[in-house]
Image (cartoon, rainbow, N blue to C red; front, top):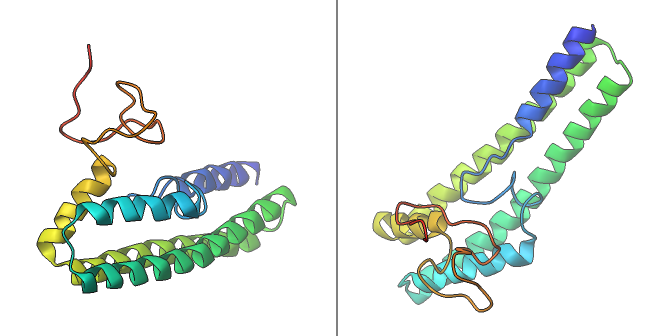
Length: 172
């Protein structure tokens, strides 16, 4: 039984790893930057794309709806994880723990599905070319190549996180 609990605890740790399909840091809306920062990131990336007024409006609506969806899904996931931890702590029967592991997995699946469907909707709004451009900006970070107020040489990202991307060079 102790081995099963150890294995389940390790599985929970692995399942709690970041699931960042759409460039969100952490494991989604609740774990990374707060929602205000995410809105600023969205606005910065959208300002770098040459979108029509309709595309801008559709993207803003999609972004808002996705944030609401992710808040609920992340809350459901967190509750399922807490319930699982409680079962393990209380040395619940193995079948009860397994049922809760399935609940956690279902909640993670719902998060991944929502992120994937969101990407498809965004691709539909922007078209293939603009979508690829947006994803490139998203992975490099907003304002890549632009100086941000208060940044020192070599910081690379407004939140002090290093930029990711192929154009990254080591400063001497």
